[in-house]
Length: 413
Image 1 (spheres, rainbow, N blue to C red):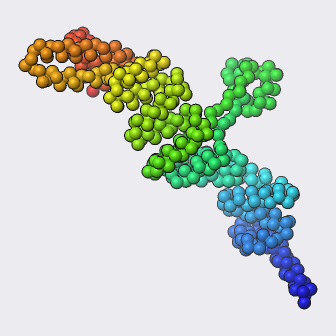
Image 2 (cartoon, rainbow, N blue to C red; image 1 turned 180 degrees about the vertical axis):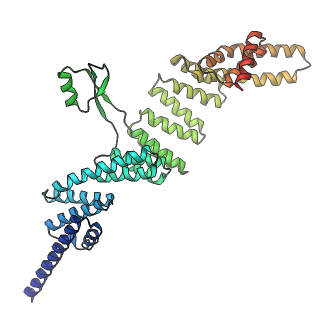
Image 3 (tube, rainbow, N blue to C red; image 1 turned 90 degrees about the vertical axis):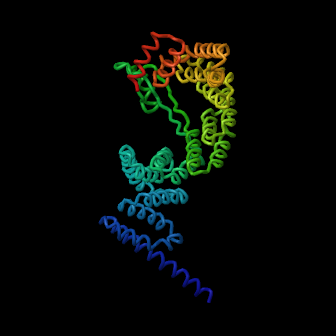
């Protein structure tokens, strides 16, 4: 009895294998005729039984499935089939169909990636996202396509998709760091990227290029975390955003970009005390960065600590002598006292002695702020700088300057 059952079982396996072989032949003929719809329906009929198929049939199934979906331009499904094929043949230590599928896969990758770039350049970000991500599925080792998909999805305002892709990039440790192998062309005297170190070194050896230089791009990891934080903030998940950035900073506490990203979130939350703390930390990381001192000036100004604000603005100017905004803000912080002086002047209109003292104090304040305002105006003239200077020139009775700036102000309005 047992022998009879075993015979029936083996017979059943033989019948299934024969059916699989027959269906695969039908699909193969349909593909040769470019009848991809028939090929797909035939292959789909094998989905439930293919796991138990012989290795040769299983590999062929993945190969034909990839071809059929590629023919219908359903590239995501084609990508999965081809990658399943390559993984399976690697597992069974064969490459019969992998060698045939590889050039097909490369052609698809090229077609889809070029289309993605065209769509992106045409600002069709939604469809560009789909094609960039499809390219990544076709070639998972080319993680830059996943990054492009995340950026495109963000531009398409598809925040859920963008967040998913950015998180994938974070999980796989994507950096986007690229090394360019540069050298100067002897004939043109221009620096060029020669593609590879081997090619560049050969050109230098042949003396057609000189001054070889390796240039490594910055890591995109901080940008990825910043994007995750930005999207979560847009979705009203600010606490999650801060946690994501804090987690990233644990592994790289001295990364200035990550630090500034966290600080930027506190600005959005209007938590200027936390922003100020991070700016103090940032200054320790990068003590020669004028923008950091400028930001500390802004924080202290908003918290009405004018002496501290002025100290930081002056430090920013020391590090960057043409920092127009720092000059302007320094002048504004000096003139902050004016409100109190004017109030007192209005309260002492009948007390001439006190009024004159206050007026003198106001003019001294203007004289202190004047050089910083003039410098801000010389660096970057605006309606604000001209209006502020006109007011000061009038108060200080600097008639020639008043006349010049009144005419200038009228022409700018």
